[in-house]
Image (tube, rainbow, N blue to C red):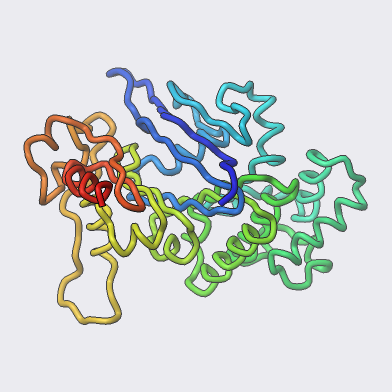
Length: 329
């Protein structure tokens, strides 16, 4: 991979409440290189979407960034004003959300929305912008782009609307795309098309993608690396093949074991007992220890940081000895 395009260090997102401050994202650090897809996976409430919102400057008040640093192409963006961040969002950072209707204005045709986005960020005329909009719709696989550029969002299927949203995200040739559950609301065949499209865009445009999802199948098919989140922290990160085939953190092991296999017949699907802790009830030590079948006393007292393994990192005390043994080899 080339040099890092996005660099996030010790990101902490807080939520003030009547009972005090709650930590929604707790010390997340990650990086993405140009042309790389980083998958971010975990259960609902793990902090995946909030991390993406913090990077794009779209945190909903009263949530706020309390600590950390976010750099895009070597320039810090987490401390920018709303107006400055708005100029970066769309031009340098594109966003794709789970429900395309939240990104599209139902009162305007998709062509008008594309043209306005292009002319806002690029010094081109409306005529040139319209030509670029048609080319973008063709690039994302929308059939009959010239005829449909005047259509409104409700005239498209869910898969077609998602393609329009991807075209919107690409309007100004952004260096980074935050894709938050871009395939969840789509059927399996459309999911596969969107996945192929994202991979092609990364390859051809050298665009970095942060792919947020709870679907390990999408991660396995799309991502180069994967970061597994739990209770606001990254608990394992590494190349997707290594994390899927040889997971180290018990939570990642549980996620992988819960995926049904077509190779063998089982009477019961494996599940992870318990539930993600609430923000006001994060346990001491490792947040996963109440659900972990391998937890011991140190897990209940001390919170582990990411421990280097051979090809990945895992925040688990069980990995400490294993990691030390691997480093000596």
